[in-house]
Image 1: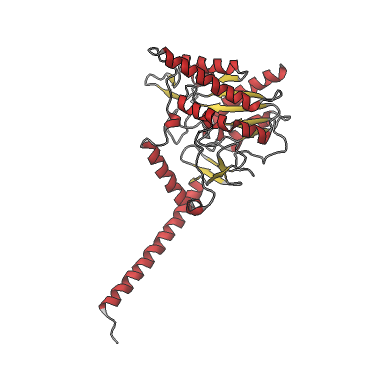
Image 2: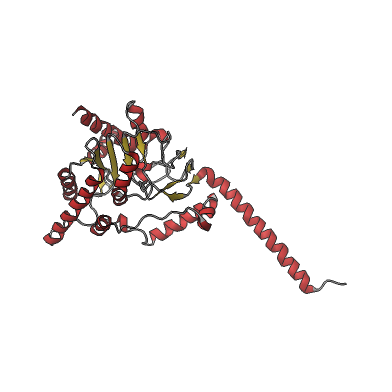
Length: 347
């Protein structure tokens, strides 16, 4: 019996569909192989300890060639440390992606440099992308209870001019935690490197459109035309910093907050910072009132540029002076922290 034209068309469509699907699967496989060594980020999962909102999967492979050059694995807890978690933690470091340091080699980041310098101190880094000072202070009590550091907790921040609403949300316990995927379709899809890269591009596009930017928006602490507003800021800021001090409450453990300003180059070759002296003094004063050690890296960064022409942000494959800390920035940070710790140890 002669096959009808209709059936031929059906078979043709099916054959074409199978080829298209096979070609799509092959393309994803090839692209995933490329992404795996070019920019493989992995998946954030919940952190049940509460020390951070999320963490990477234990042993997660990380490849970064779009901003800096690094290939590394997360440790047994899903954090960027050369060694697995030890029974004893002397120094705990918290912060954002700058201190997580997936843009440089593991041996070049702050925590590794400190560990190599101090043979008698175990330094552990739980810096995690997206964890601004709001998230770090919100998680500080849980982090202290989880790791019980004997000597110091060090928190990194790139802003000292804070948002009243964000601080108040932390104080009230109403702050929104960062999202992660532990299971479901999104979890398994993001295990495919090509899909994860596409997801990251969509997320960046959404952020560029104005979503998810609240935490990065500076609040003007000093308003010369509104003294009441400035007074209210000081009150909330002091409560926020006091909240951090209360989260530690350990006579043997000191809390250190270090400020690393963003830097940029002016057309005339001078260096510029996204902060002002008034904001700096307000933050410093709040720390001093609550017995928190405040470290300002502004002068260190400026000296590095003025004396050695070193910009602490940016890489050879990105714009000069922009983006995450490079290996020079980590080295300068580590050297300053060593000075601070040595001074405290002598006292």
